[in-house]
Length: 366
Image 1 (cartoon, rainbow, N blue to C red):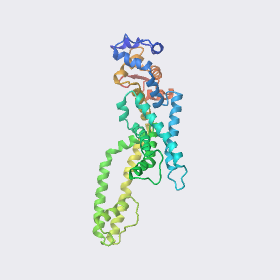
Image 2 (image 1 turned 180 degrees about the vertical axis):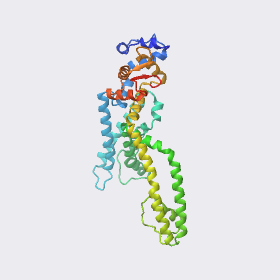
Image 3 (image 1 turned 135 degrees about the vertical axis):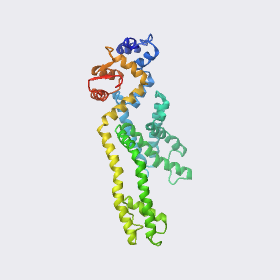
């Protein structure tokens, strides 16, 4: 424990007070030790704004900001629909003012996020931030057509932009809400775990489709099934239990093939649904683990704390220097990290890390 004593020489409460007075309480420590420690006690203006925008659990103001953005997002999705009803609810000028307000809000929000985020590359690579980027472009497209949507459009370019603003942009805006649904990760995990079975299922379904479509084509007259493409169409709608009725078998062999296909496809299509349902059930049973670990990683990334920094923090909180932190030491660390976790959440995280259930965590478990 080479760094044990230097790390423990910093008291976070003293460091916090000293940093607010403009002093450097850890300037005598090595850089790899002082940096993660001071990230806990120092906050510049950009980092405070980032916490307000990104993490609604850190303060009451952050929670109200997230609530405001949620309500604004829902309203911005509904507003374009009011412009395309048969009896138009919003006039062109009124709709232009409301939509321009939303576009300006999203442009300012994305500009603030990209300006104050600690890691811009990671921010841009995060799929949850892509809807923010695309929503911010709405103001520029709206300005290109004069802000007011005229009907009918005067040019094909203007028509394409109107389609983008009225039908595509609302969907993109609605995707902004994904960042507030932590349980959505459960569905993503269930789909990811089910991907291994997809190739076999697709191959089997394609094989069934090939055999039955060829059989239907050979069994039916050309005035009933004009081409092989029509035979494939009949096989597909039969497999999916849609049955449009535009093409139906007429011969005895055609009825037999389609009947067998109906029975086989009913049994076969239940398999992927069962697999996905089982994976989602498994993910739901460990939902606390998935959600809490995701939040913890997000908060540590927000602070710029990596694996090496975690080692320093672990040694800091290990008061007796035995390489093991107790339950109360862990709760103290979560509290001083200011991650926005309630005590109940911190207890759940401790239990998740405590693999051997001895009320202690070593660095390997951590």
